Length: 147
Image 1 (tube, rainbow, N blue to C red):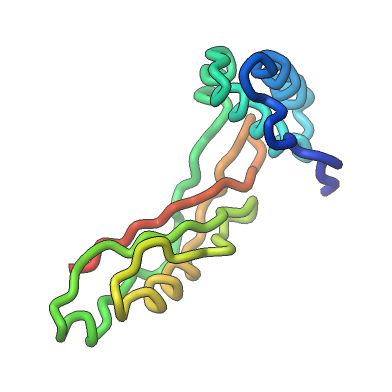
Image 2 (cartoon, one colour):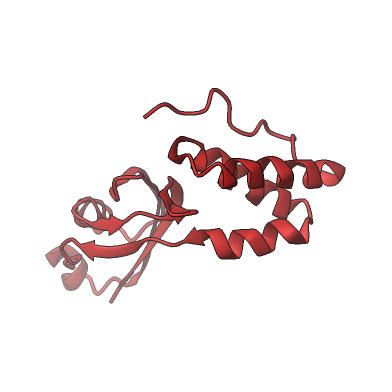
């Protein structure tokens, strides 16, 4: 599936340009072409961030979040249990259009748990996020409580 030549440039939708970005994003969404869904979402998100209320309203209607459908649970390691460690492992990934996580980075660690968390979330599968009914890539944060 071809992708747009260029997505939204940094700074393209700031301040007064929010309305123009809203129009671009809406036009791409209304084309109903799956290959333009990602760019449409980016234009609308940036227009919303620039204060264009119409863009925020459209984002609420057009975006459907991902839903986890499978994957194994995180198992507390024996090291963590023996040392009575607790806390939160926070991981930031990209959820791709196939419903899998990629490019995961640990943002907050619990010593002895990071490899287990990364391994477990690597088995997860999701119904992907959609924009106007088309799958899109989105940043995706996972937080695992360790007790």
